[in-house]
Every structure is written in C-alpha cells, then in structure tokens.
Amino acid sequence: MTEPAVSAAPPLLVVNNIEVVYDEVILVLRGVSLEVPQGSIVTLLGPNGAGKSTTLKAISGLLRSEDGRVTRGSISYHGDEIANSEPEKIVRRGIFQVMEGRRIIEDMTVIENLRLGAYTRRTRNLTDDMDQVFSYFPRLKERTGMAGYLSGGEQQMLAIGRALMARPKMILLDEPSMGLSPLLVQEVFEIIRTINREQGITMLLVEQNANMALRCADYGYIMESGKIVMDGTREELLNNEDIKQFYLGGGGERRAFKNLKSYKRRKRWL
Image (tube, rainbow, N blue to C red):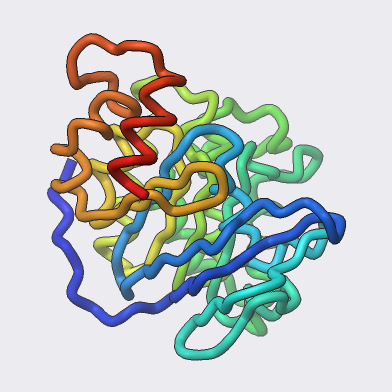
C-alpha cells in the first residue's frame, strides 16, 4: 500500500466537544472533538458501541432519521456550522456518507444506483463521472443486472462509486471492510487510498480492521464509551503498546481484557 503522507493542510472539518442524545434521553456522545485536514484520510477506531457510527451520522445529518440530535458543541465544515442541518443540504455542500452495510438499492441496476448518487447535481451528463467510477471499479461495468445480485465486495464498490457520483469534497466511510474476504479488504483499501491521492477527496473512515485502517490513514482517533481517549499520527498509533495489544493483536500475551481496559487504558489515556 502506498505510504500516506501526514497532511499539514488546514482542517476541512472540525468537530468540537459535541454531545449527541437519542430520543431526548439517551446520551451517546460525551464531548467528542476531532479534526479532519483537507485532503487527508483520518480514521476513527474503537470497539462496537463506542459511538463511531453516531459520530459520522452527526456530521452527515442522518441523526435526524433516528430521533437523534447534537445537543451541545459544534460541527464546522469549511468554517460554517452544520450541526443538525438537513442531510440533503450537507450532501449539496460536499459531504457524502457511505453507510455501514452498503445500503444500495437492490432492485435497481448498477447504472441506476450510480445515477442516484448524482441526484443533488444539476448536470444531466453523467457519462464522464460513470467512466471514472468504472476506472476504479472495472467489475461494475460488467454487471448489468440488479444490484442485489452483486457480491458483497461488488456492492461495497458500488456504494463507494455512488458516493463519487456526487462529486464530494469529503466522504464518510462506515465499515467498508465489513463482510469482505481479506483479499477484497486489501483491494477496497487500495482503491480508497488511490481515490484520495488522485482526486484529493478528504475521508473520515470508521473501521473495525484497525491494522488496515491505520496503514491507510494519515491520522487516527480512538473512541471508547462516547469519548475520544487517544489520537495521533499513523506511526504513533501503530507503535503504541496499548493499541498493539487491544486493536492490532500484538503487544505480547493478553491478560484479562476487562481489568486492563478499566485500569491501564483509563489511567493512561484519561
């Protein structure tokens, strides 16, 4: 995989001390802050239920569909506040989320799914955009049937391709490796890095495969229980002993996870 360079660009997105509440009572995010520099890939890691997907939905405006909202803090994109904005307006501003589980329209063709990604654009001539998607995902060009018949890997490619059709400035990727074979995971992450390098599209990546995500990203944040507990460059996180032990499968013999999590992590990180 191509070695990512740490970006010195100014932040495109700034999430500042946000809290997110569902159904007016359930506090999910507890003062989350992070920055995503222009043109970079930033990854957000953590265990299931930590609040990673909720963070992406807070940025993309999709909390509104789940009775959730940002109740404190701010989300700044290009210097403008977007917290609790309508999802369509956020897409038009250049942020597109690729949801966990792909969420393609199974009873529509590949072409129809790709055209759907461009619904916020005024132009009707999408040939060049589709050709560009097919240059990244040549297998999609060969698939003429319904999208529901695609393999899991092809559906993930279609979901990313649909995002590209919106000509986004920033893509939020939620678990792009979910359900894929190791070979396809490698391929998808290579394409993500290529898109970032060739088109300069900024990416915020939520991923369970911490090793692959960190090797793709420029910078990373670790989230637990609705809070950011650690952040650093790719090299800093890959070389951190706690990260090795709890996320990368290294760091020597693993002892009782629960005890180490409550003592070593919280004392050292918080």
